[in-house]
Amino acid sequence: MNGVRRPLIVILLVGLVVRLGALWLVLPTKPLLDERDYYFRAAHLAEDKAILAEGKRAPASIWYYAAFLKTFGAEPTVARVANVLASWAAIPIVWGLGRRFGGDRVGLAAALGVALYPNLVFFSFSLWSESLYLPLALGSVLLLAEDRPPPARSLLAGMLMGGAALTREVGVVLPVIGGLWILGRSHFRGARAFAGAALLGVGFAAVVLPWSLRQNRHSDSFALVTHTRWMNLYLGNVRFPETKTRTESMPPWDRYERLGKSLAEREAAARPLARQAIVDRMPWWPLEKTAETLPRLLTPNSFPVARWLARPDEKGWRGARAYRARIDGTPLERLRPVFAYAAVGAWIVVLPAGLVGIVLAWRRPLSRLFVLYLALHVLPVIVTFGMSRFRLPLVPILVIAAASLFGSVRTSWAEAGAVRRSVASASALAAAIVVATQWKTILVPWWG
Image (cartoon, rainbow, N blue to C red; front, side):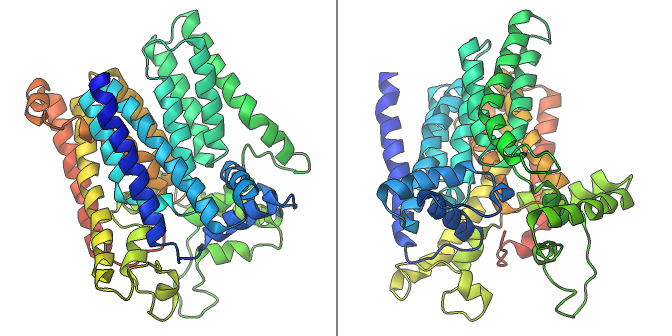
């Protein structure tokens, strides 16, 4: 452990410096799109003002930003620093998971990978909820990484899962992951396993239910975290005709906003439309949605890539959404596309390497926990819609699995049987096909 402490401290310092440096670089950039909404809500909360449509967003990120704004001042930079610290907090957790997965070397390599992974850095200074979600979700997984976690750990893991669900609603899958893991490790036998799963649920409910009860006091429909579940199904499943008129060619989000004056009216109108859209595509809807959404989720393109490729002096929406960087107007401005290429290249490497690493290490129990985590984070996206930031929760797990191949690819390949080799090859090929299908749009500005 003493031999690990020093390099881990160095990695943590590097991760913090890189994130703070990236924030300093784009400090002239104003909050954009959903970022403005998160900041607006957090600033109102910090000033003890009422928030309109409180159930529109998962609240934990807003609470988190508001605590910093109330303490250090109501400025977007304060909220961004808070987000940077949340992103940085995931690094030691990844080290712990990597260490349990493959030893000290894997833990350090995974921590370094997450510390420097471009999109994790670029999203760290943006006011999105994923940066806070990661340490909460991954922390709960780390608590369950032992063969037989003690009851107190199961309870604490459930509480972290509750915090993650209040940060991003997809976190409601976490107790399912944890429960299946605890019970599966004991082959669904034994009072200790069932008690652990029950304590996990108690911890989750203790955090989430108070918010849920508050949200449902004056509502006709029950919502666990937010009242926008039909919005997501509407945006991801209703198809609109392509026409040249402005009204008919509105983005899906604008169409949803026009469904009603209030959130409740919009949800009521979206529900039958989303249901009918799914019914009309049965029985092929699951396959069609997977084919449509999975490539969009797994494409190397991303919101930061688009913002680095766009130039601030461009007219229209591209220029409006470009990062304003301190290097603009200097010879270093040529680094803008380099940052975009780094984000694209990192994902092209991590996706197949991570999948191969998980398959080759299948005999390690944590591989199954990782597969559960990945699958149950991808499934809600397929049912609704995919965006580049929705894949951020997948990145640390894939980085850990990829790190397990570091210096031991030949050994891992030799020790794996023919079946695992075939599955690993197929996984790498599938990842390459997904990238290839998106090749023409990888460097096309895409705001998602």
